[in-house]
Image (cartoon, rainbow, N blue to C red; front, side, top):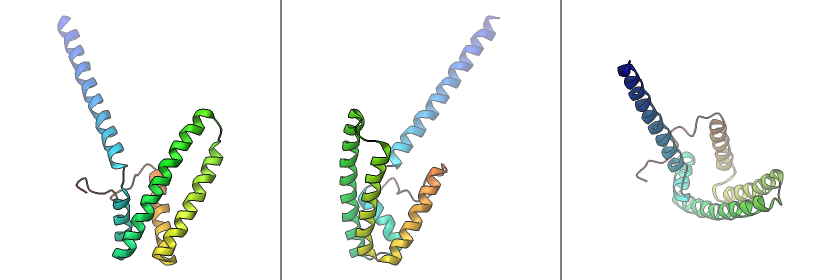
Length: 144
């Protein structure tokens, strides 16, 4: 009887370690892979839209500006959330205004045709992310 109890304890202990290892591996890849730099995003756009080097450089500057705006917006959102001054709809409206302004600025650089193409790519990516498929192959390599 003691042997069965000891074997059951060892089996449970072994299974708990394997479950914990799987959870930490998933968390590490998710947080690391989701952090794209402006340069990586500009490179991806350049590949997908066949942009010139000058356009890519300008797009990278716009994306860097977007990152700074987004960081500022996130800090403001945290403050507002803490004091409960804003609703979700207000935050979404503000974000939508920023997206439209950024899209207009990008359109001036890359042109309407490529901007329409970029919007389609972005919409498809968002659809995939909402369905839990991630970005499938659009992630930068770890060495970049």
